[in-house]
Length: 313
Image (cartoon, rainbow, N blue to C red; front, side, top):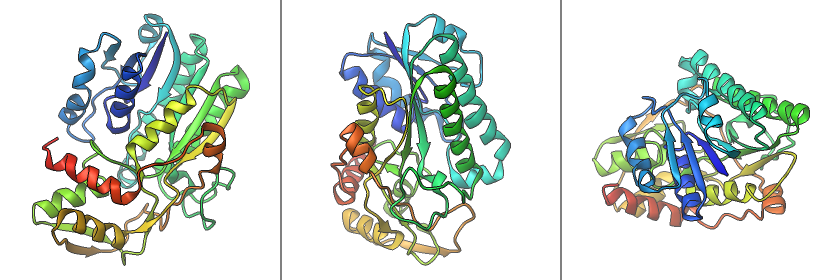
């Protein structure tokens, strides 16, 4: 009995893989090691797992035929984390984002249907809320104002999941992640980029007036939420996984300066297309159903990230 994790060599996927292997579970990872960022980073992420006899890696694209992956393994659960990531790049290549994030999700759901996989966990995103004016964001808020192709692909993925639950009875949970950070965070994401540039004495890109705010969620809290889903049959459910606290861009940079003991040089720029003014998770539903309760606040999380970065990764 195996768990298939797509995108298992990435930031969230590799942490989840490690956690589940420690629990003695058999893990199958599908990852195509694309060049969105340096594939060597993802290979380093997954290198320790390659030594575990309960681990199998398939270097494949989620849009390809996966019959052999499903046929050769007794897969009971799919955790679908693979996606073309990033709000801003999706504006530059919306066709690629649609192919990977929508068609790839359909392909996986179809394989679940054909091979009678009964549990599917979908990695969605807080970006689906777009310029939602009600805060904190709740799962039943209307998704009327997405402002990037990436966000639209995640909404489409959630709706496809809903259809496959309704039509084929697959138990599906869609988890809306809120700005996940921590060791191995993708290098283009704000906290990783800021730490790297400040340590190098270079300018950081500082968009807008510094008052945009985000709900930053530490990686181990996200992994706690995902693993809790493995023990629940929710039918079809959408849940936020966030810290349920917000800080502004200005506050974030100040906290990073304090942790590093170095001042940031700000390159002040206009807000970018696709950026939303605020993300803020209502996590009551995940708390009630999953027992989800974030444990690492931004102050502790930034210290942990800085220690990881200083260690040379």
